[in-house]
Amino acid sequence: MADMTASTWSNWSGNVRATPQRIARPADEAELGDVIRTAPGPVRIIGSGHSFTPLVASEGTILDLGSFSGLNGHDPALMTATIGAGTPLGQLTQMLHAAGQGLPNMGDIDRQTIGGALGTATHGSGLGLGAYHTQLLKVRLADGRGQIREYDIEKQPEMLQAVGVNLGAFGAMTEVTFQNMPSYRLRRRRRALPLEEVLQNFDSLLRSHRSAEFFIIPFSSHALHLSYDIAEGPVSTHPPEQDEDGLKTLKMLRSTLKRLPWLRRKLIGSALSRVKPEDFVDVWFGAYVSERRTRFNEMEYHLPFEAGAGALKEIITLMERDFPEVYFPIEIRSVMADETWLSPFYRRATCSIAVHHDAAEDPAAFFRAVELIFRKHEGRPHWGKMHSLTARDFATLYPRFKDAMEVRRDLDPDNRFISPYLAKILDV
Ligand SMILES: Cc1cc2nc3c(=O)[nH]c(=O)nc-3n(C[C@H](O)[C@H](O)[C@H](O)COP(=O)(O)OP(=O)(O)OC[C@H]3O[C@@H](n4cnc5c(N)ncnc54)[C@H](O)[C@@H]3O)c2cc1C
View 1 (cartoon, protein in one colour):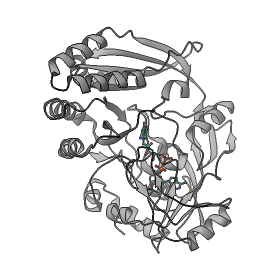
View 2 (cartoon, protein in one colour; view 1 turned 90 degrees about the vertical axis):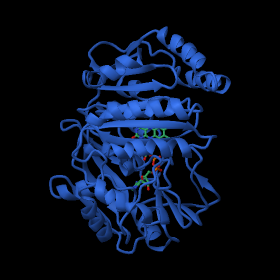
View 3 (tube, rainbow, N blue to C red; view 1 turned 45 degrees about the vertical axis):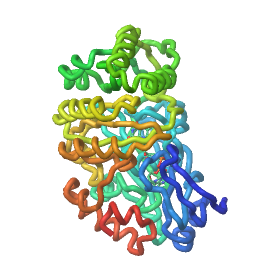
View 4 (tube, rainbow, N blue to C red; view 1 turned 180 degrees about the vertical axis):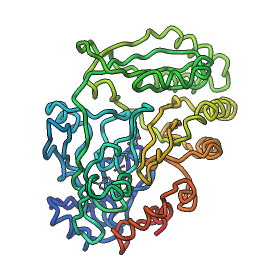
């Protein structure tokens, strides 16, 4: 077992830090069981540390499941794949493609692990497409006493619904089986649209493609609309990524024109109205995934789909009135309803709205103000992104919260996976 004497650990954006006594990397399930039983608690499992909430932080043990990685098997007829839960998505995409399979959808980046993506209900966009956990057919995990348990959607459908989104609080997942589809190509189109047009045609712009999303550019009265549709044609040239350069320009204009919003709007708006539409075909993962180098903090809430356009208007008004320092785009996506108990999409077709803030600047006032709007519209926060809710709030937002907590107590009766943060958001 690789066992590092830990110093300070921090997440991707740097807003969560911890000084665990131990960072353990067990080589197999026997060693994993030993760590769970004997290592200093709380035992918190890490994927790749891309969550903004302190889900991974522990002053006891951080458990790295990097050894449980790789494609352990696949069925070409059924399009299923059995995968180590510590596999980073960026490696999984290559392995699945080589096996003739594809994930039906992806989020913005491929740095997360499968375990981490299931931990927080990570999602992409598309009203007919579910988050990663909707692909789950089987899960294998070590419970709070280090015992291996296996659940299969055919034999224990309720257990899959209970542990499909789990915050690393029900056990340490070692292996999962996913329902995939044949590998495919996607046509990705991007164009700039006046904000007015986006707000007027909000539903149809999100619904009329297999998958679509908007990035509202602050102080510009414009948005970028991205759409993704299955393509039969050959792969074409992938234009260079411009998001990082665009962010630098937005930040520079924010800093120089913070007190001249009319000039900021004129400059960004006219630059955007001249942006050439982008249109290319790529293998599925090449079209979905972006590189995110500029560090930020993020809050994302999942709202009933019908509430999306109204909430977005309120957020834009708030931001342009009170928060001239914001320069990161607002991201709007949709997600299909599902049956997983702790899924923010539980029985609800969703419009997801995400706000971002420079990681070097304090997001608290902006996020607090936006959160009031999200809450007014009965939003459920992304488990991995900043929010201020506690177990009491979740008990009202999630109809099966109590049932999920009962299953959790059964799997981890000694609360080995419960840190002070987990105790705040769960009923333990
Ligand atoms: C730049 C960036 C882009 C992002 N884009 C998106 C996006 O497009 N869509 C979206 O929904 N989210 C997005 N996120 C959020 C991110 O997907 C989630 O926070 C995700 O959980 C991070 O995965 P991770 O592997 O880093 O997990 P971590 O953050 O390390 O862990 C997340 C949770 O999973 C648990 N966990 C990890 N592995 C296991 C395991 N094997 N068994 C049990 N529990 C486990 C942890 O204990 C923790 O509770 C983004 C984040 C960043 C920083």
